[in-house]
Amino acid sequence: MKDFPKLFIPGPTHVSNEVLDSLKTPQIGHRTPELSVLFKEIHDGIQKVLYTKNRIYLVSHAATGLWEAGLVNATKKGVLHTVNGAFSSKWALVSKSCGYEYDVLDYEWGMGTKSEDIDRKLASGKFDVLAMVHNETSTGVKSDLESVANLLKEKYPDIIWIVDAVSSMAGIKIEVDRLEIDLLISSTQKAWGLPAGFSVCSVSDKLFNRSKEMHNKGYFFDFEVYEKYRLKSQTPTTPSLPHMFGLSKILGLIEKEGLESRWARHLEMAHYTRDWALRNGQLLFPENGCESETITCIRNEREWDINKINEILLQKGFRMDRGYGPLRGKAFRIAHMGNVYMEDLLEYLNVFEEVLNGL
Ligand code: PLP
Image 1 (tube, rainbow, N blue to C red):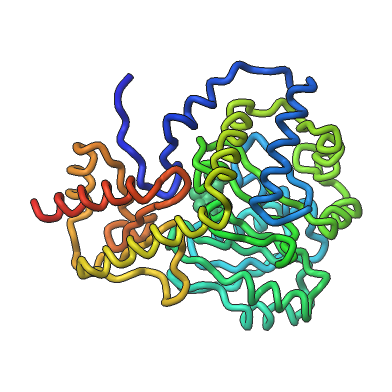
Image 2: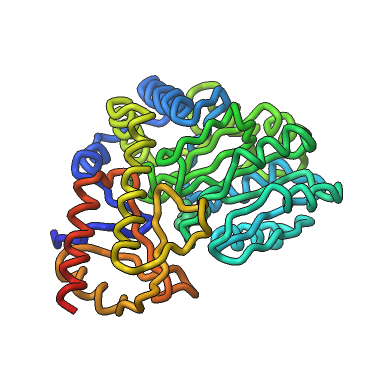
């Protein structure tokens, strides 16, 4: 088989050989005791990673489906979306296309969301759901969950809080129970370090009780259906078993690494990458204090020829990111999460520097 370049893009991320091997585990029946054992192991393992007792659902589709699931199970009045990049913007479009009442709290790309602004919007009383993206993959911006959690606990305890942690879950510490996040969403192709096409989420009692009051939820996204099967340690539909075997493998690796060491590893790689960028005369794209631990977005201040660098890096076996959408060429991202360890990052940045020197 052709050797594909090693991925340093922010998803799909690099899947190591030992994880790839786990995907080849022979299939099992999805209504068998062995599936239930596997389900329970993954369920309880994810609870530990998220510091939660909330129910965990495993779904065989992209995280975008969980955006919609969150809205369907929670929205009676309206949704407030914080929008500070491409993914949070797309999520607001989902609300629009589903016909919900919604509003957006817009930020310039590169900015993090601010709890004071959220407070101002929620004070209108028009919303019962707050939807925000923790780690905006398009800009490498991590928004502060702590201040939003404090705001909601203090002033808006009835709001259902939905957080997209697609590019942060399993790479950045998120304490779901302490923060009281009602729905935390991720797919597997980022910091979980697995192929795309599978997602996981945690659902609070508050959201589950809200779901019970909702009508016309359809079947596929109904949390009551998910719950009925979770109680049997199963999934409502035939699951992607390779993803489940992969998750089991990754959870074993996480246990071996230790949660605190895992968060520290991601932070160390982020610090290294930020310093590398600054040392090379570039700037960081996110506003100060909002830099992500899983993705470094670098403002291309020195106007490096990103297309040329990309071409040479590809010849050397690495796939770089050239910047998301409108940022292409102006800012580019380096992903350091999941199966990317310090030695992988060092190798990549050294080769990157060789390429720069040769230009
Ligand atoms: N949210 C964020 C922050 C993302 O980065 C992405 C994909 O890159 C998505 C949602 C969509 O995920 P999926 O492709 O699994 O639907």
